[in-house]
Length: 343
Image (cartoon, rainbow, N blue to C red):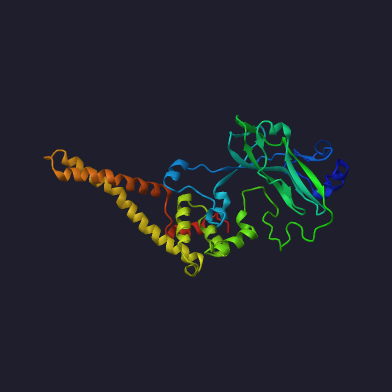
């Protein structure tokens, strides 16, 4: 049974509907509708970080989220999402077929006597704007900023500005108060004091059970989190190599984060030396072939030209790796000691 405006007003104090900007307070007379609450869009968004996606796809480096296992990218979801705050009067543009993450401007708490449901407004739906990807249900006891997965299904780019009313919240009265509300330690709720940010799907207890059953988790969550805390500021390609290195280790080969990073740093050192050789090889072969132009033609000249052409591919790949950077033992320590590092 959906609550009417009269019941909503009674619960509004318990819900604590507030906005972080004093210039845009919650206005019950304007926002409480006959059977819902109009909620506004915040000025906080998360955009996918730009990458050289085509080239990474060609090289097989495209990031794939495998729901059977979690990796370093998933444990530190903000590596792949950039948080932006839009000032009043500014906007973000949502292109057709694209998605960005946002959140509701009003922070609130769902009473334990009710569940909630978020719905988009018809006017925006007719433009092709979807405000959530099936994530419309709110558990009793949940608290925070309701996340929005904003997707443009229409043919034209849409400009989104903060503080305009984008969705509505409906309250559903429960048959009784639940034994466990959202946030109960036995439920292992993922989004306590939700800030509306990226997904924490890997924290789901059912996902963890699946990973254990499939043998997909070869390091404990504590060890993986320690590794993330020490390398989270590194380039995506470095993280991907570290993840592949971790994937090839068996459970009994992983003792602690220092051991994992130490082994990886040794391999990174050898990779750097090898890449330097690959980078120097085309120069050496090219200079030799160029010098051969002024000498009598011979088979050796053809051999050097062929070797020169063949050396360009590994040299280019080496250049890509050097551009992405390496994680050496000294660099790993520097990461841990950075002033902006947060454990």
